Structures are given as C-alpha cells and as structure tokens.
Length: 356
Image (cartoon, rainbow, N blue to C red; front, side, top):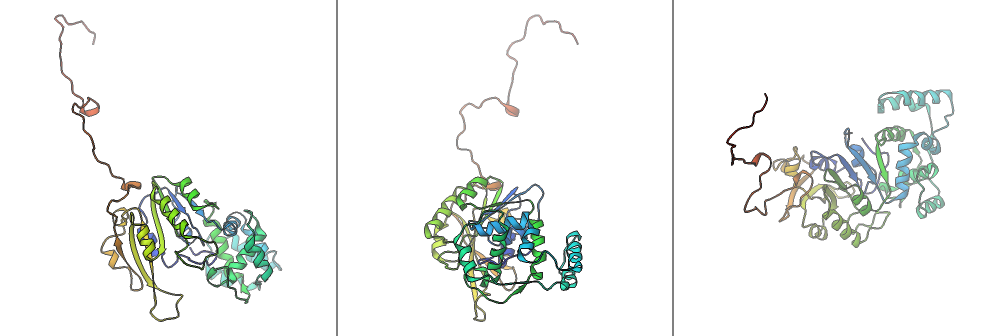
C-alpha cells in the first residue's frame, strides 16, 4: 500500500530489500523513524503482531492520528466535505460502503466533483513550522497535509503553487485509515520508544535522517547518530537500520552486519547516476530470513544490487539467533530429571505386607 503523503527520505525504493531481509518470525514491529509510514503500511497485516509507528515530528504524528481516527473530519477540513450535490453524496456513500477500494472505481465515480486543494499561504506555513501540534488537531493536520503535498519531495521547505485535485488523495487517506486501525502511533524520542518496545521477539526498524544530509525538517546532529548506535547495540530484538553509504556510518556500526545497496538515483539529472545506501542489521539475514541466500545477493533485478561489505567478528545475541555455550561443568553431577540414577541399598529381612 502506498502512503498518502510524500516524505523526504521515503523508503519506497528500498522496500524490496527491507522486506527481503526482514526476520521470519517476530510478534511486534516498531517503525522508529516512521516518516511517510511507507514501511509500516507496506507490511501485510499479521494477526497478533503489535505494530508501532513513531516519529519525532509532532505535526506528522498528529496527521497520522487524524487519518487513523478521524478520516472524515480530515476530509471535511481539506474541503472535500460537505459535498455540494446529491450526486456527490451518493459518490461518498458508495465509496465508504464499498468492500474494496480501487482506482478504477474512483476514476469513474469521482468525476462528479471538482474540488481543488489550494496552496497554503506563506504565513500559515511559517506558523505551522514553528508550533507543535496537539494530537487529534484536525485543522492542523489538514494544513500540514497541504504543506507536504505542495512541497518538493515532501521536504516541507520548498513549495510549488499549482492547486492539486483532492480526488487523487481521497482513496489513499481512506485506505490508510483502515490500515492504521490497529497501529500504535507514538511521538517520542527514538531512544525512549526503542527502550519501551524492545523485546526478544521484536523487529525494530530505524530509518534515521541520513548522516550530514541537510534536507530534513528536524535536525539530527552527529551525537544523535552515536546515541542511536549505542541504543541499538543493547537491544534484545532484531534490529535493522537504513543509512546513506559513508565511511563514518560504516565505522560506527562495526558490531553489525552491513550490506551496501546500489540503486538508480531518481533525484539526479545525470543519466545512469546511482545512489549508495546501507542496510545494517544485528542479525545475519542469510540465516534469519528464509528468502535470503548468498545466491540471491547477486540476483535482485537489473536496477538494484546489494552485497555484504562487513561482518562482525563476534555476532550479537538477538531474537531467535541467541547462542549459548557450556562454560562450567560440576565435578559431581546432581541427580535431576531424566539424568537421575537410583540403586537399592537396603532390603528388609521381613517384608511388610501390602494390599494390592
């Protein structure tokens, strides 16, 4: 499922490798730097699996809370509702009562409406960026949605001025509302949310702001990269991190497995330009993932490729990958369980009578 908003650093280009390297078994999934929610919403729903979406951007998590809990109020605030005619009402009724939502249905039915989303004013943008959002604030969520839709690459910094048709986003908002129904939405510092939800059966996915990248709305200084590493180093569950490929990050995560991913650079104007990223794990994906093998590392399509570039000297214990070894054996083993022994050491001269 696609996200309802674009976002800087979105992971749609890496979903194939993220899903391929995911551990086979886990009972909770924590998207620590959720962003657009692409990784969370692309996952198939697993019965009994807890899902947590977290982001430090309060405007973003407020928008997700409104999409999850108040989709109709959000659509009304965006200007789609109230509808202007009986035909428009019928469109909404059919849309909400339809079991499955398809683009074909929308293209056929939504031609009845001509609702356009107007760009936000510059003053509204400045106000939005300076204030923190209370969760559940529908008006603020609508303003932030407009802000992201009109910014280039979802950066919330550079803006275009052409109105866009809300019809293109209506179905995404509604589908994402259903997908987020059982997802816990958090607005916390990454260290707090990791410590809160980390368990041996957890899969913790982190997509932090890339190192020395300047396109993010929320600042992420170098000390935060170190703090993230230190937090993940002590995790009990499965850990996966995506980063830009650079010497500092590769050196910082020496205790982890590091895979380099090379893919076409869609943001470059140069033909054939490529972009390098890394996928970092505290487990060996070749052992923990049934769909990953050494052969598949070299056979992943013509447009992207990846390779293992670093393997830790001493793998960490995490999830089902935990190891144990005998470090001490007693001189005189105790009698217990199936190892117990017994022998007759005395027999009476005159046995006691017993009843059958």
